[in-house]
Image (cartoon, rainbow, N blue to C red; front, top):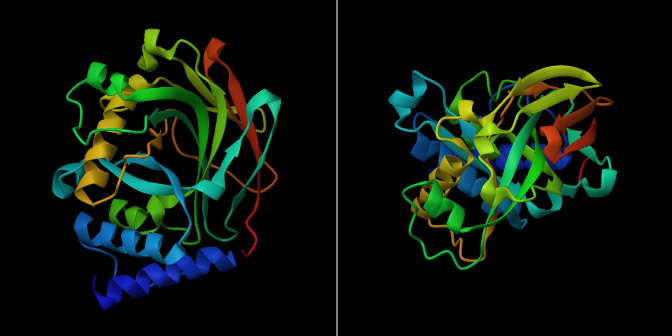
Length: 265
């Protein structure tokens, strides 16, 4: 951990706590994934809150080849996981002057007691999952260009995560092909994206395999289980305070949340 990396981590954690936008990247941007994750790991330690799960995002060509990975990860803190079951519509905060988006995602839970071996295929991955839920990831950062500046910058600020909305349990998920579920995202009732997880590399189970390998290499203890927000199915959709985001998963259910402004904590 360099002094520069620690300084960047401190700036992001401080800005998030103060709900204050950052006009510029707070230092020299990382030049490789190892440096980006070292900033993220330092920020997790500085923040100090419990981590309930992790988000997975995509690294698009040609940067995937240059960086040696086609996905990235970031922590989801336990106090930013919000329930939207039984028709509830929770509020989810985003940073004023920063980046803000909503993403329809499938949330997969890796059961406690995972033995540390990353599965080779979907069948092996399904065997270590004990629950699947419908969800919405809120992507938000105090730095407005967090995605525009590329995946290394995205990784450095918690992977651009600012919470997850947990919707209904996906019933009979073991018998379903998760990549065949048609997902639609609406903002204030207007459809902004529709797709299936078949467009997401090797799908939600592949996202779980990536994350287990990523976190194990970084030294995290995953034996207590973890939630995985497996990636934006219909895209990354910009949102503003006051808007309502709805993610529909065909006959399997739907969930919504309303966007609000983040407050200092």
